[in-house]
Structure formats: C-alpha cells, structure tokens
Length: 128
Image 1 (cartoon, rainbow, N blue to C red):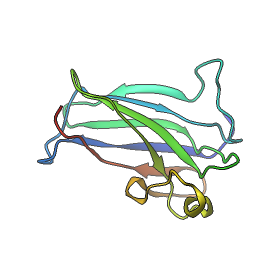
Image 2: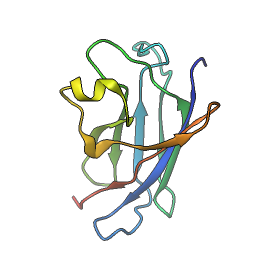
Image 3: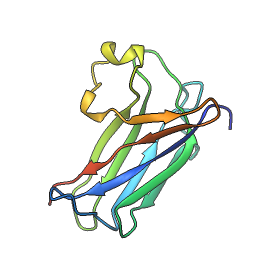
C-alpha cells in the first residue's frame, strides 16, 4: 500500500497502571491520500491486548482531508465493559490547531526514520 509505513502500538492499563488483557482494540483510518474505504475493509482492523496489555498495528500514516488534521480512529472494549471511542493525533501537525475535534491529550509519541514512522499511545481505562 502506498504511504509512509506506520508501526503503532502501546498498552491498555487500568487506573492503578495494571495491564488489561483481552481488550478489543479496533482501528480505522484514511489511506495516504486521505480517502476512507467505505465499501470494504482496507485500513480497518482489530487486535486483542495480550497479558501485558500490549496492542500493535502495522499500517500507513493517514493522509489529510479537508477540515481535519491527521488522525486515527480507535475503539477499545474490555470484556464485558463499555466501549471507548476516540481518535489519536500526530504531534506537530499544522492542522491540529484548526481542528475542532483535536485534543492534545490524545497526541501519540512519534519517532522513527525516513523509512518507517513509529507511534505509541497507552490507554488508561476506568472500570465499567
């Protein structure tokens, strides 16, 4: 798939910083050109956290589209718990300041090199 490879991951923890296993992490995003696949399943997927609360995806950096900054959509659902729906953002994006939905608390830690972008975000889920 065209675009900058993005390796994204992190952990899901409870408020006492204990890992949460078995949390469904669902990700969807635009492609490198800013287009969503509304007819199929490209750039959509899910994983379940392991015993250490770890989750990870290999994807591409999403493109921009009018009115929004660069972002990823995420849903998390612990077994038997409520669904958290949110978005993750890239630091340093010019569109962050103009995007009415942007929340700086949801900035990922981003690094990498010219060949691959690495991003991390740890979620803390309250009970219930």
